[in-house]
Image (cartoon, rainbow, N blue to C red):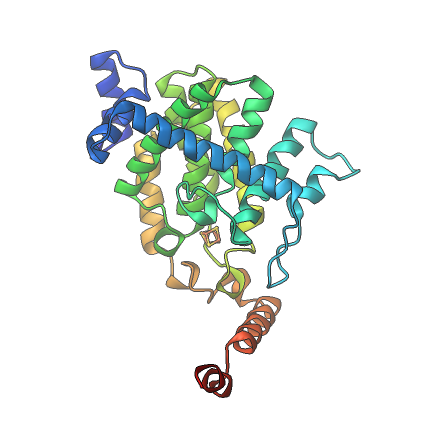
Length: 304
Ligand code: SF4
């Protein structure tokens, strides 16, 4: 294991004087039994897939068979009504777009899960456009994001089925926010404050996918989690303190997840999935699935 806690990570870099991403890189080298170059190449491939997911979502037709996914990234990108600044709008549309690629069975990086796969691409591509980060700086940010995920996984969870959506989109937002603070030159304390603030904003969020498909509310939650990641990064870099130390925030995340009813852990039995519209969609999707299954007669014909 890399570190048991964020406190351990800080203590290590205080002792060694290393950059925050460096112990994660060394852990990856040992864990995967690979050379440093190979780890960087793997990160580069992941970053390329993230960028492609945003581009695909913004420029291809994103409609799912259920009908619940319908080009929301493009709709925001091309909207004639401007509630948000151009940069904020880019963040929201990019996160929506990348997550829609996942819901339409395209290629994404599950960082940390497929359900939350729009958050890091949305945050990092937007941040690169705004701040002009080099790809190398992004890769170092991805290492910090990975370290954050490993600690949350160890002490709470990264999966909606175990800890609710707070664990899934919440963890992705923690990773993205911490990476962003790091890339912007924030101190380790500021990086971890951003993580603590994100957890405080997302604590208690349930997992309630309509029809059991990772589409609604998952896609819009990716966009809102990306927005929380940005705002938490701004707060942390402005010296706003999470007050509750990040490791205690993670403990709270785990405790809330453990006590959350199974209705709200990807079972599609509660929340939005259990609304009358949610149930009607589930029924329609089930009928569609039955209709596309080959019947026995056809199977016999094919075999015969
Ligand atoms: S609602 Fe559940 S399935 Fe959807 S993103 Fe959140 S955790 Fe994942």
